[in-house]
Image (cartoon, rainbow, N blue to C red; front, top):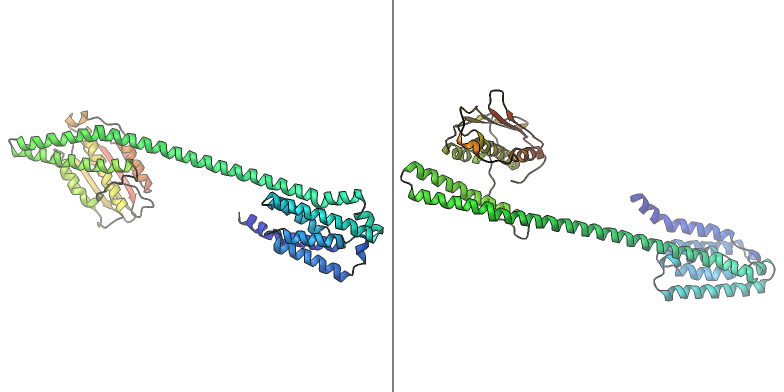
Length: 387
């Protein structure tokens, strides 16, 4: 792109040099009696006009050519002016005016040739040669310029049409995505939010009507978890519905909120131990948020599949990374959580979240029947993910 711009900027200089050289050797017939200084001056005028004016307006060069050709049979300015007249004309009247000037120039050349006689008359004043010179100097360059102009217009129209089609395709894709996001948001609101709201209402009723303190506390905790889930769900729905309805985002959880998450699981009867290794330090928000989500998803799977198994959460602060390990022991027997449904996408999304930060996630069953979820997250994460 930069090379083509340089070439385009150098075109006037190259054209002017060609006009100068060609004009210096194009004097024919009776004009050969003109002094070399006069011919050189005329060539300099023609070349200078080509350099200065040809890209902005071809009229100065056309007028100079109309003077120099009948006088000195200097045809290069006329050829260049004819080409640029074809490529840059703005109105038909302007093009007609140029053709009129060309007719006047050729008539003046014929009269000058007949007055000079000899070779000059034969070259410029005989009908056949005059027609040939008119075709070579005016007709062919003008037609070439018109063809180049038409080709440029066709290419410009094709590019514009391609750009328009690309924009329309992008708009259709954006519209389809927006419609799909809106559909998902409606389904989540109508189904998930409704069910969670019912869960919160039933938990509230149980809290009010429970006879013992333990049941009251469990119902209150379920209600708090449900309300928190509704808040998170409203944030997700706001994101799905797009920037037209921006969500009021709450502060996202980090490792400082990990104890509250563990207490919620402990209240449901799971034995959980938290172990910190290394010197704790403040890490990037995306790193801590991802570590929190790793523990959250691992505990969710424990609730589903091994609710009565002891679980240990290890947070290891290493020099170059944060290592999160959630290990649960083999369950002693079938637990109530094992019948909970699951789509299997939790660990897949978790792995994508960790890998977006340049980390690695391992999740698998051990030989003794336990299950490990281990995430290694770079302390200086290269990217970021949303909560």
